[in-house]
Image (cartoon, rainbow, N blue to C red; front, top):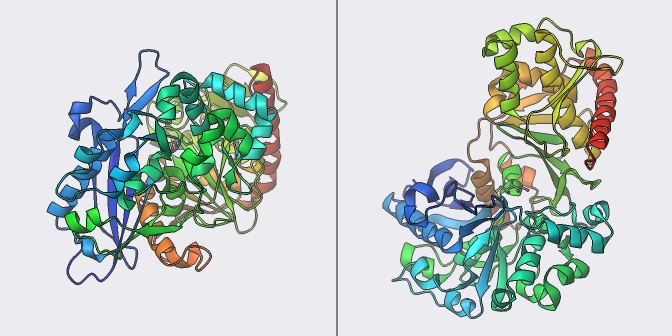
Length: 537
Ligand SMILES: O=C(CO)[C@@H](O)[C@H](O)CF
């Protein structure tokens, strides 16, 4: 809670899949307040599960747009009751679950710009959405539209070269295409299409806020190099009117204007409070981790995610490349691996009686490099690449059906982290003397994992116990944008010293050459499996 002595604060919001979070930081970037409102439990009238509605076909996934609006009403009331002094907020920004989309009905802009402070946002905006149920990132009902877009643009790799990713069902252009094709009435009655991020900015701006270049990268509509809409993609997905409905993209960190008077009158914000363009949750998370060039962010959770800062990206059909949210001339990449902690825990239960202590003891029984044995453990259909099954290879690349417990334990760790490394390198990340790994997530407390990561990546591993990196990143970006963005001051400069990363593991340089060779072998073996299973690689 900000106190009278606090001179200046910055506010970050995160419109995520299951909740809306808010975080207040002081001028020294220290968190002084945070809170959240969860959709399922705090707004039961919408009957969501995990913040969404999934249709029987398990393919179509949406969320009620007005639920997000009402949640913001509740969040701000809670913050007010908790004593947050909104008058100290110099700037605010935010993030949103990526790829989701909001459809503002024709005429909504007038309502948005004349909000009355004695009524809630939800009361006033309840009839402003032409498509009341927003498609979200978990939706996978647009495969037909994905194939149409890739066919028209020359195939998955050509589309990745142009937009930073092959056509993914969750990507907004394909979601818009489905509405354009199947609900033309609703589409034609839409005057603005927002992402979840820019929708959040619209509410605070009291006007249509632009999409930023980083979250705009998650749509299969933006030219990843020029950061402007690609006319061919627009036409295929939404015809001649889509560009007008989207508005123009702006660089991340853009100061898009003063806060709407609605928030000044109702909550006591300063009329000088600036709205900094919102961005996607993963770009904001990169900022919240204070990831910098040469670093790799690794979040070890149910799914493992790898965040990369790239200067020269090599788009492919595995990862996704976004415009960098804090250095707008650079790029970032995201790799998601579905087989993360549950796979590691499965081997622990099978080989070490469910004990991490015994797991670590078994790990010590085999040399680094596992005498050339390699394992790949895709208990569920993997995302990167899209293959499944368990595959074990001996040093001479012979497939075997089992390993001893000790070999298996090392093989699951080396296999997973060789996979993270090879896919990072495929996207253009170059490991070098200044590389470092920033590890977060539940499994980052396991020291033996971190040592394998340090050895496989030949880089020091730092850990950070940062909860809500997405919301924290949005608050950091509020200050960075308020200072003028990356054209005025670098992100490094803005966040210097903000977080205390702890050095957790240093690489054993005696095995660097061995893992370099092993990485090349892993890549070839995984490509072989992908080919056998007819998967992109
Ligand atoms: O689809 C994703 C990234 O491409 C997810 O991480 C969503 O952003 C989660 F909200």
